[in-house]
Image (cartoon, rainbow, N blue to C red):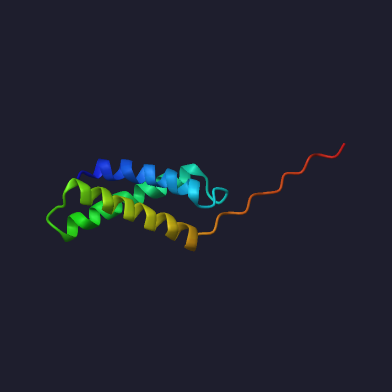
Length: 90
């Protein structure tokens, strides 16, 4: 399975995972990018460790990689605090 498919599957898993996990923490953009990165890194790791896998195993590996990276992001990274907006006093 090509790296492009791993990135596409990772983006889809990132978007879906963002819907199930706490949405307010990062936003959809960060979830999708994290999923893409997880899918790509898992495909790269499998490519380095083995000769190749079929399409079904490639999809499963991309899903697992994207999911692990998303959960890891939620566990170890804390979102930046948003500034409090106050209305000007007249």
